[in-house]
Each structure stands twice: as structure tokens, then as C-alpha cells.
Image (cartoon, rainbow, N blue to C red; front, side, top):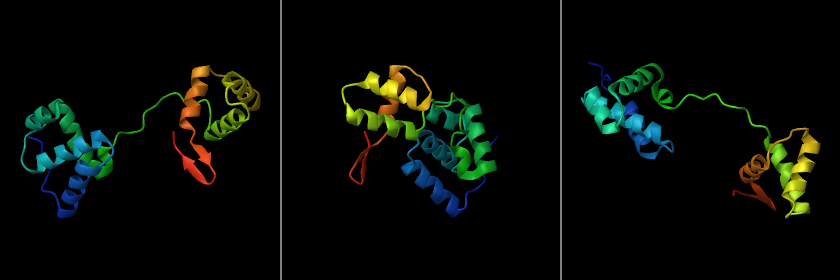
Amino acid sequence: MKYVYPLSPEAESMLHEAAKDCPHQRVRQRAQAILWSAMGYQRRDIADLSFVTPDVVSNWLNHWESDGLSGLYDAPRHGRPPIYTKSDGVHLKAFLDESPQQLRQAQAQLTELTGKSSSLDTVKRLLKKTPTIVGNAVVAR
């Protein structure tokens, strides 16, 4: 039977904090599972409460034992690198400040500036991700 050894007061406090206030739902779930394991719950009981398989709970326990709290976070995943950088988004906003209703024209200017072409949907996503600067304040969309 796999379980977590008794937790130190610091580790238990840290896990309670993570289970309560962490912005990532998966980390909250994993921290709660570690706490349940320390309280004596078996893997299959934790799995039933967490709606996962016992093997998944076992992986969470292994990651906790090897890496501590950082082991409860998801590892970075591979994916396609973004086409545009944040500075490209700032340039796009500047182009649209000149002529707000001309997104295709701003797209063409961005392509000319960066040499990178993309779909109009990609340009729209870049526009949504780029914060708006009003005076000295940054206003997120």
C-alpha cells in the first residue's frame, strides 16, 4: 500500500494553503490528495474522491515525494511556438490606433514589418492577448 509518510507541520500547512488558494485546479486537487493520504486514506479511496484512477494517485504521491510542492504542478507541454511576439502585438495595436476599423490593413502592415504571415484569426488572437496601454496604466482586455 502506497501512502505519504507523516507530514511536517510546515508541509501540512503548505499543502492546506495550496489546496485552498492555488489558482490551478489540478494543483489544488493533488494537494488535497496528498493530505488525504497523510490522514490514512488508501489510494483507491482517494481515486474515487478525485474521479481518477489509483495509478494517477500513485503518480501524484511519487511526484510529491520526489519534488515536493513543485511536483504537483504540471510540467511544461510541447506545442507550436507562437508566430508573433509581444512586441509584434504592440506594433499591431499602434497600427490599429491609426485606423481602428482596418484590421486587414493592420495585418498587412504587420506582415510587412515582421515578415511573418498568418491568418486573420491569428492576428485577432494576438490583438486579444496584447494589453492596452492608457496613459501609464495597462488595461487588460
